[in-house]
Structures are given as structure tokens and as C-alpha cells.
Length: 392
Image (cartoon, rainbow, N blue to C red; front, side, top):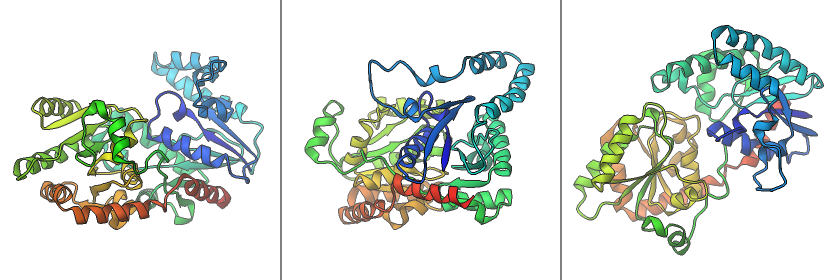
């Protein structure tokens, strides 16, 4: 079969959807059943190496942005100026898309990883990774909620098949949109191979400038926004810190500022000044696996996720995890995580104290996590995605 993957999320700094698209596409390209694989971004077909090549080849002249047609760039610039232009742009794009995709036929597949479906002559698959803009609209800018929700609703109606990444989200899609179970395939994600256990010597060598003790700190890593529940975690951590008899383990926080996070950042800066918390901001992808593997535990009490990749990354790294009960993270981790009520600070305090002071329970979580993480991989995700293609 021939497959076209939506590639907009691979242009510029990768978000969660970009990471999903990148890893899934690499695994799909190894499938023998796919005879041709291309990306489609902003009205143009793009060869995969143009968006997936991570090399620093000096002779490489084409960047992803240079592959966007000039006509699209001009339209986008005009459209940003007034409503009439926006209306014209959305009216014109279907014709541009249809022309660019005219060579494809009924049995070819277009897979949209970000719920944006062009006019395609073959079969269509859409990935819906979560319904956070429906479930928690107060945790997103109003304009984003309107935009995302309208496109998800349109994609659910038009797509031949839907892919999602946990049974929790599958049930939400079925209930909200009255979609039959046969139209949805669950494809669990994988964690990057860079997330793995490391020795204390390697950890010390890689983190010398940070002055961290191997397995001697808690770690929170995520974009910082209300849905991630960091403020409640800070409340619980400070209570643990005040009540512990010995030296408290430090809490390391990493992540880019997200929407509506100014108050949380001001609090982080204050706590850092007081020596209670260390906020590292954005951490390069090459360092993050080292920090995860070296932590006593990853604390991730997010209110809502489609999957909760930081939990899987921690388990694969030989690091214990605390995460939220009745969420996709509980589904993904099973009994290999310490589960808490995400809005119950007292439960979080007890969990943090347990992770800090009960080595036998900690070792059991680590052992279970390492074993459980073997069930997840991007090759498995790709195989499940291929089943979705074959279903239509």
C-alpha cells in the first residue's frame, strides 16, 4: 500500500504530536507492506528524509520550511491579516490539497496524526491522542479550544478509521461522538531507546555541572500548564519536606512554560531562591534520559493525558514512578507505578514519603516497571497502526 502521513507537526520545534509522528513514521517505513511513504505538509508532498533526517550534512540545502510552496506561504501571510482572507484561504486549500494528492487512488492511505484531514481520493485514518480540549477546556486558550474541537469533530465524521493511544481515550471518543468500537484502534506508544538504566559513574560524568546525587532526587518533567497539576505536587512536596526527619530529597523540575503558567513559574522561582526546589527549565533531549534514569522517582500526577509518556520513559529507565489513578497513566503502568488521587494532596504526601524512605517498595516498583516497559515499543505501535490501515 502507499501511505501519506500528515507532516505539519515535524516542521519547527516538535511538540508531543511531532514526537509521535516522528517515531511512528520511522517504524512504519520499515514495514514491507508499505510500498511508498511520503509526508504531506501545507499543500505539498515531501519525501520522508527531508523531515526525518537529523544529520548535520553541510551539503544539505533543503530545510523543511523551504519545502513549503511559495503560494502557501503567501496565502498564509495574507490570511493572517483579516477575516476575509482567512475565509478565502480555507476555501482555497481543499483545491490545492486535492491537486497535490491527485495521483493517489482508492486503496491508498492518508494518515493525519493531528486531526487535520485534507481532501484525499483514498482511505483516511486520523489519530486523536486525547480529548483534553473537550474534557478540560479551562486548561487551554479559548481560541485553541474552538479550533481543535471543530477539527476533531470534522475528522471523526470524515475519517474512515480512528487511531488513539489508550483505551481510556477510545472510550471517551465512543461516548462523546457515538462512534462504533470497530472504527477505533488503540496503538500504545513506545519510549525512545535513549531511556534506559545507567550506571552511577556515567550519571556523575554527565551531570557533574548540576551537582546531583544518583538516585537522590525526585523529578517532574513536562511542559508546565494547569493540566499537569504541578501546583498540587509542589504543595505535597513542601509538606513532605517540612515533615521529614532526615534530609529531604530535592525536587528537580524541568519543562517549557505552557499556557497559563505565570503563577506557577513565579512560585518555582521563589522556591528555588529559598533552596526548596530546583527548576532547570527546558532540558535538552540528550540530557533528559540521564536525569530520568538518575532520579529516585519521577512524580507525574497529571490530571489528564492521552497516554502519559514520561511514566513509560521512567519505567524503561529503571526509575520508580508516582502517577494519577483513573487516568491513562494508570492504564499504561498497571501495578508498576504508585498510584494516587491527583487532587488529593495527602495521598501525594504519603506516596512521596514512601518513595523516599521505603527501599524495598521502591525496588519492587523499579523491577515491575522494567519488566512492564518491555511490552511497549514503536515497532509494536507501528504494527497496530498497520492493522488500522488494513481495517479499511
